[in-house]
Amino acid sequence: MSDRKYRQRGYQDGKQEASKRGPSDRPAKKDTFGPRPINMPGTRTVSRCSHCGSVLQATAELNARCSKCGFELHSCKQCTHFDTSNWLECTQPIANRISPKDKQNACTFYSMRVMVEKETSTPVAGSANDARRAFENLFKK
Image 1 (cartoon, rainbow, N blue to C red):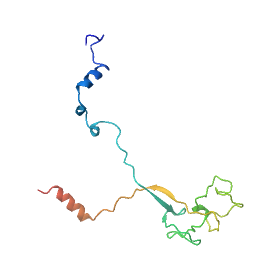
Image 2: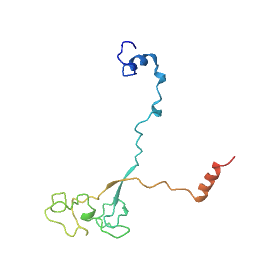
Image 3: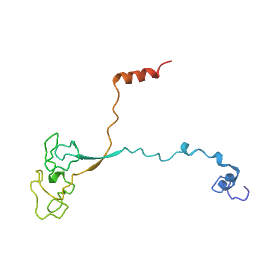
Image 4: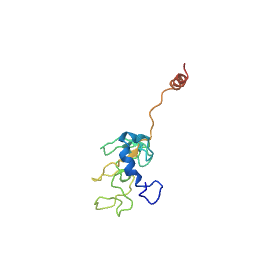
């Protein structure tokens, strides 16, 4: 200590004290502060009706319709390549604009739009009696 100009503890103390301490003196990794692990929700791929938003089953039929609203599924609005910012509202090289976009067509580039969504549904809860029974079990002797 006498070789130092100041008496307060500083960065040089760590070298001397580290040799005195063993590896077991360190706190466990789980007990330290810091970033916590991220708990991300699951994801799923799903096709939705562009008119009503209901979940659709993947079909390759030309005459398929939405089961909820009856919207024609083989149309431009339901296609993966539909993009209103493009010149012919399609990302594929088509010769002529297909109009109207919400009616059935025979486009060869058609593929149903599939999106990745967060899994937001919770598991189905049991009946009210199960919840009451679990609550009563907490306070049993």
